[in-house]
Image 1: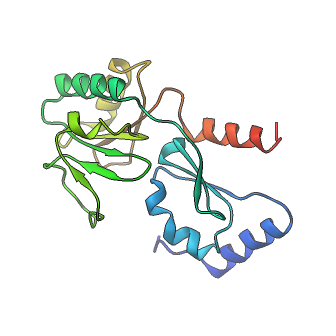
Image 2: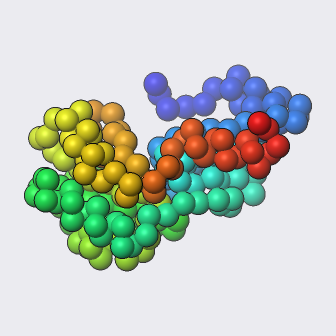
Length: 188
């Protein structure tokens, strides 16, 4: 709960690696948020980031695989979400930067190099994750509606109680990324 990684956990990850076991972390967070974890773990393991859209090698500090939402699809999704919720505010995560609409309510330090623009401009850099903040709308109902209205275009998930819908390319989930990684490692 204090967002730290204990010495015991660090030792366990090191022991796994020494035994030839690949440790895999799975998170909704983008690779840019993994640095602190990677440093603490001694750059061991693999992280499935952005809900499975990015597979990141902590050892080599590089992307192994990624899945984007094309600009055309992202534009259609933004249009559909805005038709449903005119007050939706968008953000994007790409492989190399964060993009926010000007009205995005930042609850974190906005990193240098963040693009600030309308969603239709932000998605010209194909995102690995498209986010829509729906303040004041019941999230469970919004999730079901958004999933139905964007079926076949994106995979929609909900990030806790923050009124935040997270969208990835079709079929992109942490589960699918783990299966893809396991297959590449020769694990059935």
